[in-house]
Length: 230
Image (cartoon, rainbow, N blue to C red; front, top):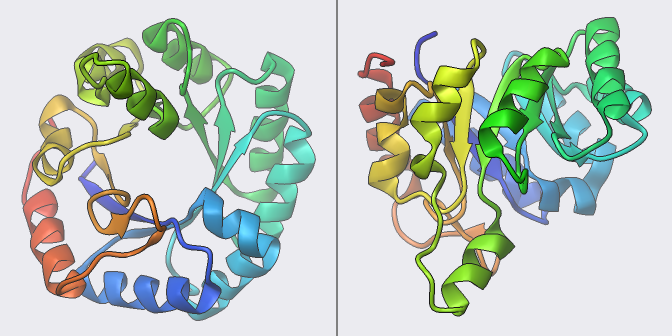
């Protein structure tokens, strides 16, 4: 799989999300993500608006589904999402329901191993249950809490190679990566590069960062697309 650049629209204003998405696609971004803040603010309307504005672009709905898996996935797929996210910490039956809905309504399923006691085993279980992708994810609150306690902030890169080696489906690394680290993910065998907080979005205010975002995104996209996946 060739490297893919995905931008997480972690915004709470639909107009701003649409403008950011348009800018990002001009810069070379491949996939759009309706981030959790956008889904909380706009729900299905936000996904429908993205689909209407960008009819050919893959759209990831970051639902972080924990229960009611079939209905949530069905609703998002019908609204225009091409990918939906289910949590590894959900009950296995919930993951199976999301996978079934994905098959029924034409959406791919991304399984997120956030907060798994064993991140590698969590990734394996997601693949075994039928997920199409693994999101290897160190959470925002977890990172900040550990750092506030005086410990080294964990990174998804710590176990990324092991997660990639443990599964046969594409892997995405998420959670506090620097710009350089995000661009380097394909070298770890993870072809799906996510840009969002804090690379192009202010993580605390959930707003676009200052500066020339489009030019920065173009440089990032070129750097990612010119790589081979390890």
